[in-house]
Length: 117
Image (cartoon, rainbow, N blue to C red; front, side):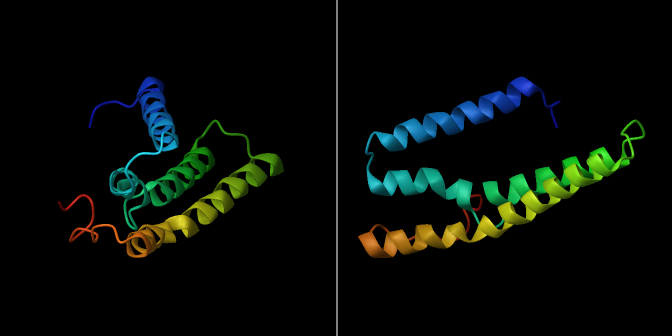
């Protein structure tokens, strides 16, 4: 795996901003749903990945030998873990895509998740 850098993460967030801008331009609905589908995948989408990232950050802070052992740090770690649970709960957003496809008569969802195609 290539080394992660802050610039690589910034590129990711810029891509998400580009997607948002694109969606504001009133694109074709089928195309818009297809572009958003990987972000809302039930198992690998953003809510799940971001929740895992927040939990991993909380663990890294707790296990770091240089991290202060204070009530304030414990509270912040707890906040990260709470946010992770809240993010993980959003994994059900993939059902919204299915409902939108049904509602608007778009092409049915392809077989398998977006990574299997």
